[in-house]
Length: 269
Image 1: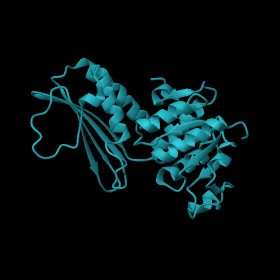
Image 2: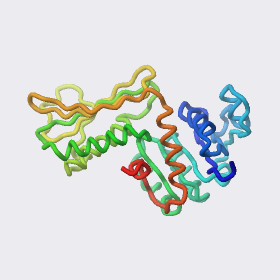
Image 3: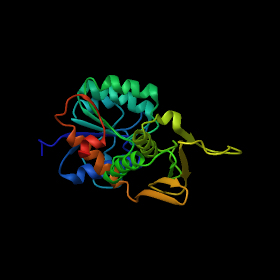
């Protein structure tokens, strides 16, 4: 038991946080050694198992991330950009693998993650599932095979509570399409069409976001030309796929050299 990596879950009360707790404790591959929540949260100081409506797990929820991180070999983090940047610095101090599933990160956040990665392993991905990462690779290959006469549209759907758009996965797919074509996504990207937009720009990569209900995640990459379309699709029906991928990343990161990695590295793709 003691030779299994100790893992901390941040944002433990959230849907992904609770799924991660269940996945880790049932895995037989990692030990849950800490759960972090924001100061003032009603779960702080209580056993995480009881908070989730089950039996005690012997792990108290804390609002002191560093205290939790120093006892861990890995931190799994699906929170918000500002919190993730703070956790990255603390995980680097503790030399713990930091697995980041947080989306909505901007250039200023990424710069700070890069600094933290000089001291510890960071595995960051907009989506942790095997299926999505295969879709990313397929998207890159198809985009490389087709010229810019094939329009690219990425359509994604998520639950009503998701706060960022396009999703991190959609941006991964868009980057894959841009890489396949050898262009800059920043220059090719078109999001949120509204009103009289005019004709589609040649070579652009479009994004559309749907929000509603409890949709876990749906992503379509559409390559459209005159007279034909190719549609690559991934449907997620259970958040457990993301938790399993994150756990796999936390285990894979043990013994790796400090630096930034993604799920392609973890999965050997």
